[in-house]
Length: 334
Image 1: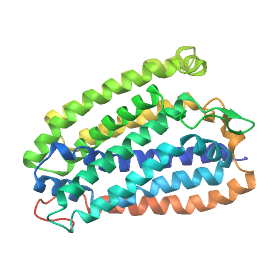
Image 2: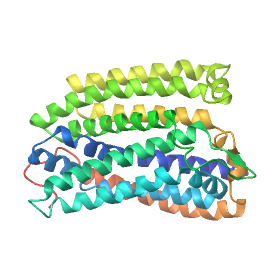
Image 3: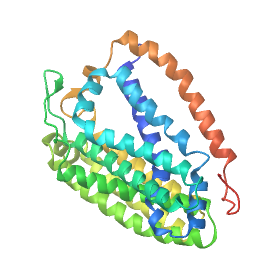
């Protein structure tokens, strides 16, 4: 049986992007929540909760971006010129956040300034990711297999809305992570923030979901015509069910339930994007087959992915296992 290599690689890239969103999303969310915790001790505990694993989470960003360039070069060459501005801002913000993470532990007098930098880097990186996603969903103008749009095409009301939606979603992930990893007053405050972020996230998901079908006829056809109209019924029901479980977890526990449910909301949102796109990789401009590299290249690179991805999953899982459980407020990263 001949393997459908472009489809397999589309799945691998989608998995890498989703893994980055959910793994780096909660530590970006912790940074977004920083202003709500003015006490230095609370902020130290918050950073200690992500210190052992935050840097490794960005491995998936490298895999997703590098994989896109290697296996879908035409899509890479089309998407990057369209999204240069938000993606460059995102990368600079991630670098700035990483510097702030390290430097805040090395100074007493300047720790507040680095806290502001950590919050700013987290917020800007998240907002830029959301804008890039919104710009991709609304469509990229392509002519003769090349980007044909303008410099500011990425900046629209819809992309700004998706940027705000992602900030709220990451805040939910961050708050539910703090519920999982902390105790006492900090955990109680995180529960309250998670409740507020849940309402904000659900509202943002509703706005973006109702807006998307009217961006392009293909979206409208995909979500409101038979047989795919079934998705329009099933997905909201699943979102409602997961939201109720998340709320119950915040109220009655166990503490892992809100975080797992928050990941479930992101999985549904990600699945919705995939359903809207397929079989395109650049909406309504390039299909997965059209954008793929030659079969020989895809086959060769697949052997590397078969070796590399399990290794990443093993060491990531091991790191999370070693640092499982609640954070000791008196110990941590220095």
